[in-house]
Length: 510
Image: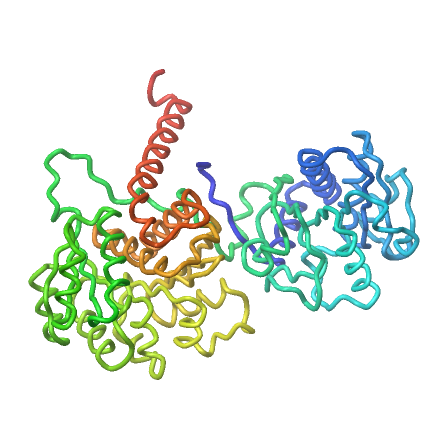
């Protein structure tokens, strides 16, 4: 775990970073030289020497493509530069780097893509904001038809750097080499898929750039959040580890709530109670052992049960059913001090009047919508409005609590504007009940006193880590079983890292 936290910044902020570097004595040529060298190094690390075509546009990406071509040629690679535009249209630093290229250069119209074993897409980077013209669309199609590895400079040509989607068409890459910090297109879908593997290279932007340029978000990694709740004291009592309460639905839909409850117990909550309506008591009782079971009936019954259990966090939504009853339960739970995790039916039940929900939410409450639920709660934040980072930030500010906008690119936003994007996960988590397990993990951390934003961030990352370990074929019930090992491994890794850092700084002796 590296001590620095990787940031996600917009295209304009990247331009500002370049200007900041130049204002602090780093020339544009030096930045371009390091970028091109990083591209060549990333290519040579992954592929054997082969005929390579560097397709260069007239701007900075093209200049970086010429530098990469030069470094590859110095390593013995056979490289041809293909010009998308006449040489006279190349300008600034790109023209200088074109002049330094001593290898073969041809108009792109004169090359056959299929004659090459690798293509460097250095046509346009993240700065492109207009659709590809017919000439470039035909080129993109020819590259796709050639079925050879493609390495993109900065972002694949045609992919919008901020919106993370093609403007009209994009060249799909196997590897994208970007610089300084990540852009939204590298993290959010579908852009992330179009980029393929992404490498972010340090090109010498001064470290104090953050004093003048605000990141859009940060990658969700353990360095972002404090230690997950844990106590090694021999006299720790279960009540000191939090009391998580999970609300079950009726007899026909109880499994989701039990999944959340089991996940909460495995994630460290000291005491987990499943609140069951009368109709579901028998079916729940036959499936529970370590999880407590308590009957409740209606909104007042829930309030009484929460008070009796002295709840420190409450989960409502998995399998609860949609409608007036669930709405009343949410409002009832919101009247108590314990933070809530609202998922599934608890969200959809407020589709017709989301403001009624928002007026009851507190800072440490957490909502965990998937795409459809998000659209129902925040219809004005449609898919066409900004990117997922921006939409989730606005949603958290409107709701006044933490939002976990789930997906392959899960985004976690706090009501104060902080945003994290989680890429540490596996597609195998796209299985029924996985979201219920995530709600239980968040609930466990909230129950133990962690703040909503950090509880959600840690839970999402650890849930993703479990998915990576289990791999294809996992089912939701598998995740709680592996979770103690996931938590323990992270805890040990953090202790080792802290010890190494202390040793390096001379605070402890070897």
